[in-house]
Image (cartoon, rainbow, N blue to C red; front, side):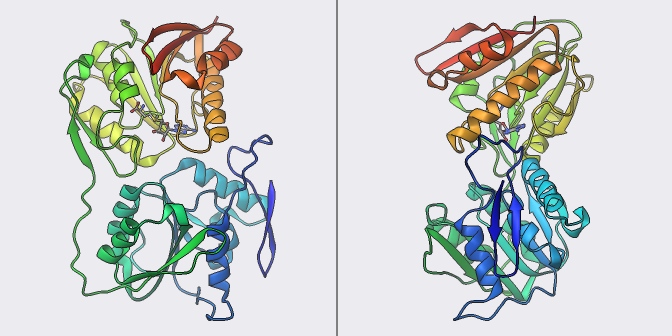
Length: 385
Ligand SMILES: C[S@@+](CC[C@H](N)C(=O)[O-])C[C@H]1O[C@@H](n2cnc3c(N)ncnc32)[C@H](O)[C@@H]1O
């Protein structure tokens, strides 16, 4: 846990799940820059926060916690960000209902007077969110984006220009930048181009040629990932009323493959992204027969499943954010899988060879075999004994 100090107060903040080995703070220079701008600087007056304040994409709830006195609405696609926000509010003695938590899939508020956007890593998610929020923005809405310089591109600014109105940026401070956007009510409203759909290639088992649905911001929303493709070629052949989990399901292509291969299975699709779980559900409903059984869960790994209730976990762990964080996520997923599996149940994992998941699996399960490999990827199997 670290302490964020603003001119008004200090806040104890942590990421979620809190990991004492995690060296990363729950906020960065982009959050600090935005908070300073809201308070007012030598050159600018404080921003009037007395109206409806909406905070989009707050990574770990730092902005929402500091602004809790203004009863903001927080909109995020991340379940972990929501949990971080609740934990941070609690840590600072603020009632949970001070911040209204909405997911990226919920209907946004009707009217927004102050729109604060922490630029997300995914341009697609920003595009979709701005389209959804534009009808609630009026000529007097203060719109301020924030991000690290490396996260803000010409394409980012063009999205604000095209969907909300004229846009300019601030000077960079501590490698962070603000985006100032003036709503133009005369701008023609266009619908969000999301979700995207694409057809899977041939030669990927039961899902060959199927159409998958991808809501904005999810992993590999434009085409099949090459690691996932390798996984689809080496999934276990099983029969009977298995309980299968597609852990970190993205658009659900792995779980769909398991369901099509074994019509008696019940597949639980889990992801921490609301957009991913919605994508998986639409992909499943469009492709699995009416008798196919499935559950759809937004959550942190397998935390919401009862212990010893699952026969098979299929997992392509996340690998994109900070190395330390993603290692921790894979580690948590493997531990969660061990707890959720029945005796004799199996965890199948695909990963880049260099990530060394076999070491972690051997540590967690006491065993690990390589089912398949190519120069880039391995599919690993660990059994709960
Ligand atoms: C590499 S992608 C795999 C997606 C999909 N299974 C595929 O193979 O195309 C990893 C997924 O894990 C999800 N994820 C990350 N952290 C998670 C967590 N703590 N709990 C559940 N899902 C998580 C991400 O949102 C992402 O969709």
